[in-house]
Length: 161
Image 1 (cartoon, rainbow, N blue to C red):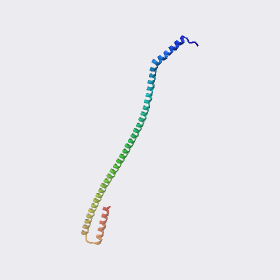
Image 2: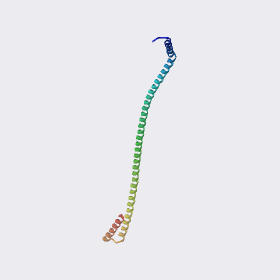
Image 3: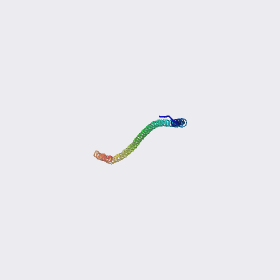
Image 4: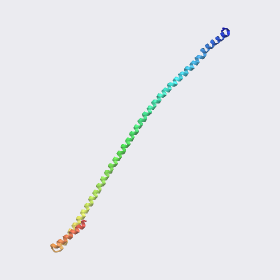
């Protein structure tokens, strides 16, 4: 292997190329690579933050959903309680109305019974007066009195029935 001027020229050209690359090409290339690495690192950090935020949001959604279900169950329970209260109130009102109607009917029955008793008393008294009139018109005779009393008893039995 011989060292001649071509070899020295090529070596010198190669050294200039290395120096030129080192001085003018390598720094911008390294800056671009470092910027790209930094952007990738920022992207990864942003992805991690987004993942954490997503996890937090999912937890918050789960909590809100749990709270909403609890609230819905509470509202349903209140509705059941209100329905039971309405039913109980309606039952109490129906019982009170039934008692009132029963009292009215009992009072009406009592009044009818009193009227019937009063009519019966009037009829009995009129029959007694009529019987007494008949007794007083006839002569006093035990047999006649017995017949009149039997007749009066029959009339009273007919009226009572």
